[in-house]
Image (cartoon, rainbow, N blue to C red):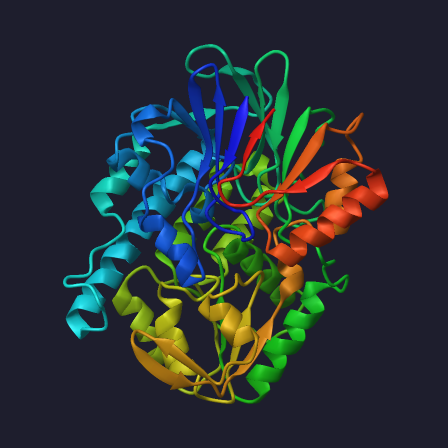
Length: 454
């Protein structure tokens, strides 16, 4: 086997790993780069491998940094199957067309307002590209072995937690096995089921998003209660940029719990993201993927106002003119989506709070706001930042380093080597040290386009 790291190295975006064995080429994850401009520009570059030569793709989960390059791959010649879980297939059916719509909308806006160096600005891919990619998805079940094209390699999936359908992937040629952790969830997440334990692998590709920190042990409910009550007392609105998949549903759960316990006032809650609304409805379909009872799931999903259309989104301001409310909207790092319109409306008023709810990748608008920027550019214009900026980082859907170490301890014996990916450089370096010190395993940090013979 030969493994090439084509993404998620020294960063948390763009996950792509190419595995080659006896002439067969398998791509594990097919994600977009996000955040820093130098990373985003890679989305426009040709892959180091011809898409037409790739025999199959395996997706660990549906987040755009793991699936969002599929429309380009198919457009540029990929013709094989894309294997994923049933929930991941359903989520990609929501996320990929939405991603295409955002790219088309951004290009149209840039051309209309003239803030582009390209004449004309073009979308990275179109809605037609996204729909073509979806036709390649093939759903598989957890815990079953499947043969990849050519019958040289087999793969299986186990639950990774994180979001609906998220998987760790084990690939074997009968002699050597390789596990991709995917994005590992947290063992005690109140909504999503815990990651399954894996007991053996010759090689392990392991995420390191929170490899240099532990999550705040405090109860997120306490902090969320405090932020909402303080903002409402000022007469302000709480705007929560949230990832449409996973985080938005977690936020709705916490808001339901706070209201049910009468720890916050019965403020109007708006879920202003068509994608997040559609994902929330999938909770009922994929009940085996989460911990909520049918009754609790119905209460969480039904306790908010869904704003599907742009007109409904704009009507929030008229409905709550000067009256506190809570708006949950995508995207979670404020890189696009409807939340940008809410930032423009609310970020200039010190009564309001912009509450981020998890990891903010370097270079994103969310990261700049969390780090204290006093002006923010949105749609080509600068807006002063006067609202309160806060971040609930213990709502993360990623395991921290103590949770990763606990997951690793279930291996019966050490892999020959662990490759760390999907983390900023400091996080990966810190996790490498911790694994070596606590477990004595051999650990390498993967870098862009590194190749390894297994």
